[in-house]
Amino acid sequence: MSGKLLYPYGRPAISGLFKSQVEDFIVIENLGFEPSGEGEHLFLWIEKSMLTTHELIENVARDFSVKARDVGYSGLKDKLAITKQWLSLYLPGQMNSLTLPEISNYKIISHAWHHKKLRPGTHRSNQFEAIIRGVKTRPDTSFQQLELIQNQGMANYFGQQRFGQKDDNVARALHAFTNARRARKLSRNKKGMYLSALRSFLFNSILSRRIGLEYWDKPMPGDVFMLCGSQSIFYEPLSNALLERIKQFDLSSTVSLYGSGKQLLQDDALALEGEVVTEHESIKNCLIQQSSKLQMRATRVAVQGLSVDHDVHAETLHVKAGLPSGSYFTSLLAHFVDTDYRAGQ
Image 1 (cartoon, one colour):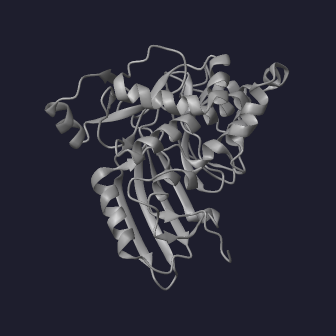
Image 2: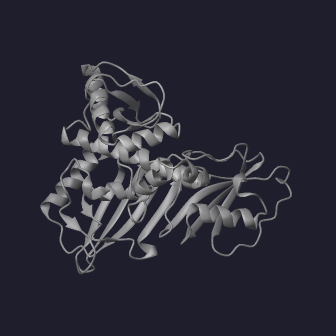
Image 3: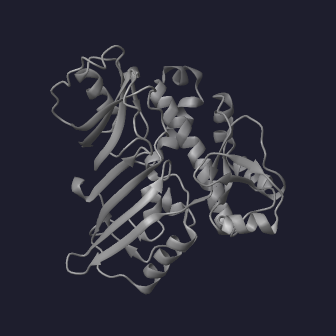
């Protein structure tokens, strides 16, 4: 997907290999609050590698003798990485008697009790650390792109994870949803994954169109705005005060995650989205048939603590950055380094 999208600071001037080793990628989930210390839900702070989050949930459910549906999570974390994330387990009546079971393929760093189940998107942010290999030089263009990212943020694209290792989740979704029998046979997780891929594809396509028109970090007439750090949205005609709040990163324009519901977009912003959606009529029809609900997503996000160190002798980039929940590190990388590169090609 990334190669087909426009990026606000031009194409990357460097290329390299990402996740060639499991140790090359570290992700730490920041919950943003402390468990209350009492309740029926046991929060586990877990370190894992070579497991998807869903595989981790299955293992934890087995080890604690609970059903997988009683295990909560906030974010999905990469398999080929060392990750630290939170899970919750519904264990009523066990607060004062629980003994942690023996485990083998993940590590419980700490645990605490809380009064609510952990839900997707609950955590505040993620901290990332990555090694990009095979980077021989860093031209001036790369430094300029990094400075722009630090000052102006990044385009809030959905990452490659949404579209599958073979970039075929959209095609698979269309194949499944255009046949009622096949659609009924989908598991809940598979259906959710396919719907997310379709909506993410439309979002990325609209955002790419806006970047081409230079309306990704500045508002377009008819935009709906989102308060940075929250999901609160509102419509307001453009004004100098509004432009200043956008400049200060207090607000961001938004793009639709297609579905049914009250549409607040107006004028040029609504027309642009309509044009893109019309170009992908089959995706639109699938989302309507599956009763997807309209949501909004910010067009840009600020990158916290971005640092990029180049080791000339090892030919590596050491990248560190913090991103809010729901934003993708792979999308950040695509702003300044081409990780689709393969050695020998």
